[in-house]
Image 1 (cartoon, one colour):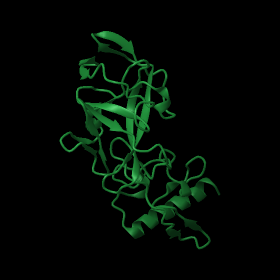
Image 2 (spheres, rainbow, N blue to C red; image 1 turned 30 degrees about the vertical axis):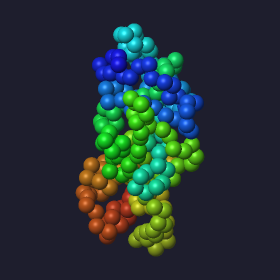
Image 3 (tube, rainbow, N blue to C red; image 1 turned 120 degrees about the vertical axis):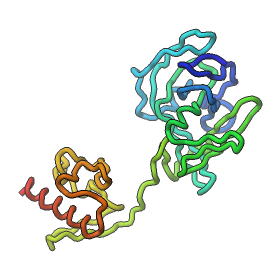
Image 4 (cartoon, rainbow, N blue to C red; image 1 turned 90 degrees about the vertical axis):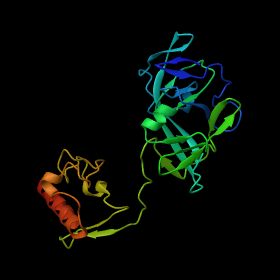
Length: 243
């Protein structure tokens, strides 16, 4: 074991890179490490930041530098649903030349996951994944490199709402919108997001207790008819901005 940013990491581990044994990615699951480490830049998502590197002490207090950071996802089978879902690891670091990939238990727990070593499972209330013990190491391996059925962020991220195609009819008889899931705000915003207040964009979570538009549209919880009134007022505001 050796120091890593105030924690411990397993050093001298066998290669657990993307091209190691088994299909897909694999990594050592370590309860002493404070960050996720990967030795192959190709496993990072498109948000990889080459300027985000930090210096760590890994082997016998020898400092090494992270070349950057970003998100890495593992395609894992949810033990409850049987679907292949994406386990996203945020703020993972790329350290080239290291003989191991490493997933930090501390970082998983900080993101809302529960790691159960006796049961060999990782869960967050929305999905449960398995890992294995191989010798003196706990290893998590990607189950599939194919398309994912569901995306599960590292932390709490629910499945996307179903495309129920609910129809909303506003007080203007000539106005009709068809949504593709509940409260799809993109259908009520122009290119400048001016249907809702300027400071409230289509990407905001606008219908919870903290939504930015409550001063204009009222406070939740919204009953069905109240929601319609809110969207009707949004439509009138839009007409006011764009006669």
